[in-house]
Amino acid sequence: MARGESGSTPRAPSRASRLRLLLIAATLLVLTFLAAAYWIFRPNLTAAERGRRLAESNGCFGCHGPEGLRGSGNPGREEGAVPNFEGTLMMYAESEQDVREWIRDGAPRARREDPAWRAERAKGAVRMPAYGRRLSEREIEDLVAFVMTVGEMHAPEDSLALHGRERAEALGCFGCHGAGGRLARPNPGSLKGYVPPWDGPDFLELVSGEGEFREWVEEGVGQRFRTNPVAQFFLKRAPLKMPAYRDHLEPGDVQALWAYVQWLRAARTTSKPASIP
Picture 1 (cartoon, rainbow, N blue to C red):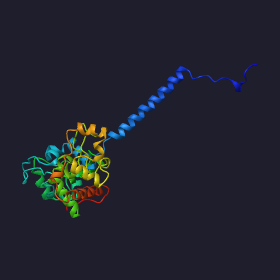
Picture 2: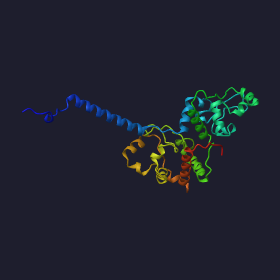
Picture 3: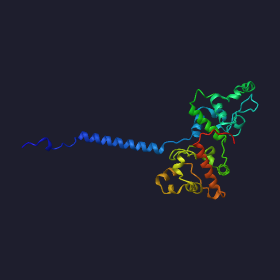
């Protein structure tokens, strides 16, 4: 008696079908791995760091010096040099909007409309170019963030946070973490390839709260990273390592430093224009 359709024996997948299934599974596995690797190693640069890189790639440091800290000579002008962002910026910009107009238009509107200023400017060999047609609005805002950071044109009103910034500078923190703790110095071999800024997303992956922050400051590493083999692999490879400051701290330093970091991170989420304190 012949088998009916309902009683037919199902055929096993062919070898070609099995190979296709294996190929699809392997492809999905590779894509999942690549996506996870991208998520882990992706750079999370702050506006100030993006601005620093833009300044470097657009020739700003040619006149304002490395990281805008040492202006070149400018014969013909009374001051004799291009202003740097750190020490002489406040002689030329009174607000964030002034900085923005210097970058976008070559000078603030009030100066451009002043015949005496235009005549004085013409005497100088070096003149500030206008980047408004070269850079996007976001790029200009990133440059503004960088210049404001280096120029310290936005300071904490809270005395504890302000003291924290002063102690961070005295302890040498800004040497690796950049001006104000807001830049991403290269650190080849580390997880992201740079020292994480205090106001960036990477900070939250390393510091869960004030207690862990204290561990990093006092011991040079958070406790949960001491026994993590993956973390240790990257920490040992990196040439720049967090110092242990336990023997170099004054009473209240950790609280003050934490207050400054909290101020930084809060300021990053607001859109309030910054001005000279």
